Length: 612
Image (tube, rainbow, N blue to C red; front, side, top):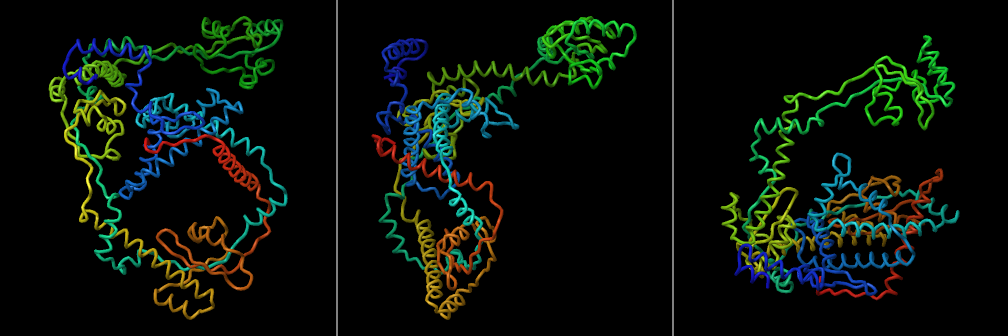
């Protein structure tokens, strides 16, 4: 409806009509017309709904991280599993939040603030940056309130978990047994077979490739892609185009002079005593020529300054208690005050030096002034220009917008909806109904701090079935990899089986044929780096040998290994102080997982998979 009005009416009349429509929408509670995904329920936990608006930022964040990790190896079919994984995680969080509410757990504003500000991703030069915080939330599709609610749920979950940890315990017998297992050492050997060494031996026929293509045809789809035209308005460019005159800078200097001035500083000594009588007595002694510093060392109650003769160094207004400050900043150099009463006692002040306030000359701060003034002017200009750009984008074509505002009209490359090529805000706008289906300009988008964009559809290409020729090499590589993994595992299994049966000659023949040798490892611990972590893990999962060695064959990603466990020993070590804590963490995690599963079994949970 709104787009139909927009297409037929331009200028101030359109704004009036739109305003008249929006007011009753807001008053009668149907503002959901504008909220899109916030109305769509994707899951429900005991009647507590999870909306698509909540789900999408979590899913898109997880998707971007996985795409970044896998690159070109990220398969489109993984999206379904990822969506289910994310929604199940959100359900876990909702179940725990409901439990926390029943138990009366709360998170204070201070706890939330400290938790967020401790995150390294929001820090610049080691300090929390509110600008970076808001920018990262915006780029990842979160509002301040939405993100903070998410963190509150995480903190509540941790409260539940830590309470389990505090209630967990270990018996001395359990602890001794775990200490023994933890300190255990194992002597072993292994044979390593790498799939890459056998890839050239694979013989994959065209027919087998075609068979895979036909059986999995629905997965070989090239997603819909779009190309968009866009104009960009950036604070950086506006700042570059801002002309600053000398008169402007001089006027700005006068306005900001205080920023470039040093405050008046005063250097003083003092003697702090509790008794007014003693204070007056010391003032008389000083007048009679007694050394101020010696009297301070002898009588002052200020532990921070008495050993240096009461010296306080230089200080500015606001650094001392009001009574002390008022007197110190009214004295002359060399003057000794009468006793001054404060909450700490009675002060005798000796003013030693005055540094008057000074202002840096204009020429010295000219560059800084120019930069600051330019930034301020650019901020004012960009505010006006963004308002103008937003209005023009609503009323005019993108070509007219570019011409009237002297902006460059650019065109993107084709990109898919889940592409990593584009900024997420830019991409979401490109695939919005207004741009993709109605062919209208997008609203004004701030895609990063100080960078604003309006875009419109240039061309779209529908989802299509990829041809056999396009995917043949991909399928062949996949089949070759699979064959090589199975081949090396088969060799490893035969070698291990031959050793287990005592057929040493057969095992050695297989090793010789494939140019394989044993690698010996002498007494490795669980944390040893004498072999890969995967090999160490499998070695420590094998049973303790009683009579002779134990053999096993395992698949490890792009490798297969034959393992030979020769001996096990447990040295007598000092008790490991960190072990009880580690074991309690493991115990607490298991209890936590068990309770979570029980809670979910007793809950009414629905997932509307078709809406994800």
